[in-house]
Structures are given as structure tokens and as C-alpha cells.
Length: 162
Image (cartoon, rainbow, N blue to C red):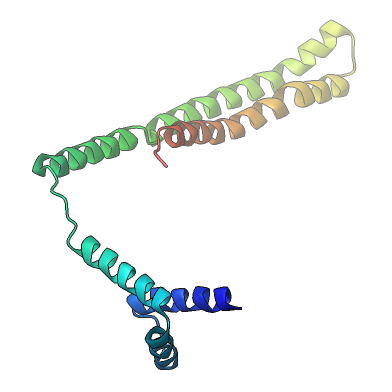
């Protein structure tokens, strides 16, 4: 019981030193400190430690501030340089669209000669070309800009400092 009372009073002393103690707790603490030499010693040691820390200071090198700012500016420039190049993504997407259109148009026009060459019905050849050439090429075309953006953002994240 006595140890719990001292622990409680030590906590109250700590709270009082940072100004977080209520008026009722201050009164209880004053009454206890008047009768307990151990807690008086603890309060005195804590006050001396805080007084010693308040006088503690250190000098920094004035060039350190400039060095840190220069490093931050350099890092910001590096990260901005790693941003996705939207012009390149648009150009690649337009080229992919042109190639997809040309390939799809070409595939649609060779289905009849291909059917005759393979001795297959024209409908089957058109379905095969549509399934094996036109749909995959359009999927790739639609996926290409997304992959380029993800790749650029991934490269950007790898360069970030957490």
C-alpha cells in the first residue's frame, strides 16, 4: 500500500512539473510532501533535473542549415525529373493506336483470302482473326498507357525517401 502511494505521488509530482495537475491533486500533493521525506527528495531531484535541462543548449554550425536546404532542393529536383513524361506516353499511345487500327484493318481484309487458302468457311476465319488478333491487339493498346503510367510512378516511388 505504501509503495503504491509513493508511486502515485511520484506521478503527481511529474504531472505538477509539467503543469498538468488539478487543484485537488495539488492540495493532496502538498499535504503528502509535508509528511514524506522520500517524496520531498524525489520532487527536489526532479526540479533540479528540469532546471539543469532548461540551461542546456548547443550551438549548430551555421553552414549546416544551408547544406540541409541544398540537399533538400537537389532531392526535390531529382524527384521532379523522375515524374512520368506525359508527352512520351501520349506519343507512344498514338503510335500504338495507329498500329492497332492498321493491324485490325489489315486482318479484316485478309480474312477472305486466308479462308480460301486454308479451305475454311469465311465466318470461321473471321472469328479466328477477330479472337486471336483484333481483340488482343486492342487490349494491348488499351493497356499500354496504363502500364507506362504505372511504370513511371513506380520508378518515382522507388526514389522517394520515407
